[in-house]
Length: 378
Ligand code: PXP
Image (cartoon, rainbow, N blue to C red; front, side):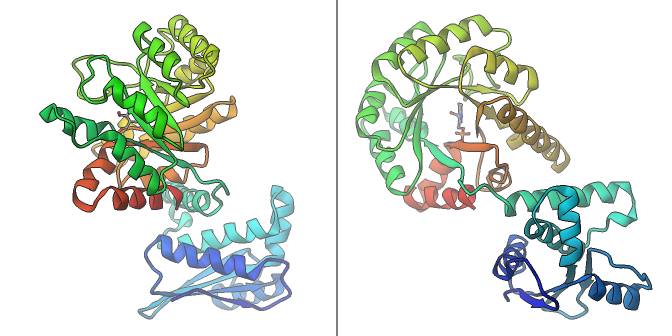
């Protein structure tokens, strides 16, 4: 059921935008079947309601009324006059402040109540922050780049020619992805040199080459010229890339590698854990991007641990963007844990492989990429 917006007094806000926001909030919580009424009023109007129902004779900014009937989510009353006053204090627009109040009222209807105590206040603020981030998302969506290494893993299992990661890359592009990623490993366990050369010729979006900063790989990158190189750590024994690159410990050699790649006209991203000193070191190397290793978030075993990792990523993405780095993210992202991260506006690119290739076994690669695009683009 779409939300209804009732306007009780002259309002300087865009009613369609308030309605779209209310509809979006319902959808975001899988409540689109419920009725939500948003009443926009002025200070006199909200004061009357506040006094009548709560014996509080003053003009507050927003009041929520949970519904008593099934199928009805509730009513949210907002004073747009108060929103305008608060907007001036908080240096925002009356439109945005009204939407913030809508979110606050909506989160109350979800059962959160900051008046219960400090823990609940924190929990509620977090929920509001998340919804706000999502709703005020950047106008430019993050890019989704698909790593096709695991198509090559299947090919290498038999040592033959199929399935071909180069063909997969074409299909991934046709499905709408923004780029193709491959990791050329020292042991050539999946992607082969021939794949990278062919991909360079056929990829029409953007080709990212993940590689260790070794002499051999730097030479290949200089020769093939991918659109961007992501420097990753590499150990022969590991199943996949475990942990980010220790830029701090290897600053001199990474800086030299970045310089060599820049001299060949190739921009550089560095795959690192979300840690402040690693981010600062990455900045010093001259690389233009970092890719935040999302493994600790993806692998967290409890909700609490995942929350903690999520907060760290949000904070570190903000820090990296503030010091002028472009922020990518990847590793272990799947159809369950990507949506939340997609709301972090500083992350402008996601690099996802295993979950998409795994799903494509069952639903086909086009469907698998489109499902992930829907999560990333919102
Ligand atoms: N980003 C980097 C730097 C990686 O090494 C990998 C794994 O190859 C990924 C992203 C993709 O991780 P996943 O396959 O878990 O989606």
